[in-house]
Length: 239
Image (tube, rainbow, N blue to C red; front, side, top):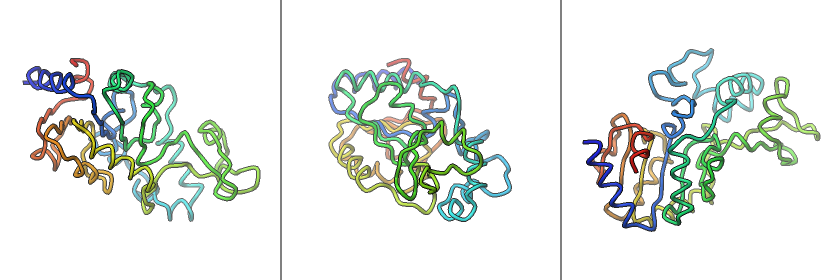
């Protein structure tokens, strides 16, 4: 069954020059970054506070040191490299077939693999800015800082990631909607499609070739034109 479905996907890709990929945590699990909601994921581990609480804007503002204790320990990873899916998507873009990658991930692995048009709905751990003067700081600065990272001006440095209680960037959302509207094929992969408003963006797709690749069941399975319940690596290695 998997072979038959990947053959259909291969045929669709060969006939298209406007593919958009919409991905979630499952894209990066094969690089060693845990899926938030999987059995072994971040949300099934125990902390003093629930991850949703720690990763909220209000918690960051009122418990900044505890936020960074969690953030450094659980959100920043060393030695993580792009996997086959990241590389294949970058190859499709170089061949002018894939027009955009829309990601819920914050790890920067799509860009490291070579993708250029990456729309990061939830920001990136690689970018950090002073809340006072907006000076840029690298992820290495965050890792090496003791407790709370401070700017040279004295302001607190905050990761450029969208925390709970914060809205998505309007420009990024607008570009994502436009890319989805124009897509011949929308490939949705490695996401449970439970995080809104990001998941709601796929409703803007207008055509009849929405491909949904995910190991577990999602609320959008019935809406997919091609449903592949498998790991992304297993699918992309056969393209």
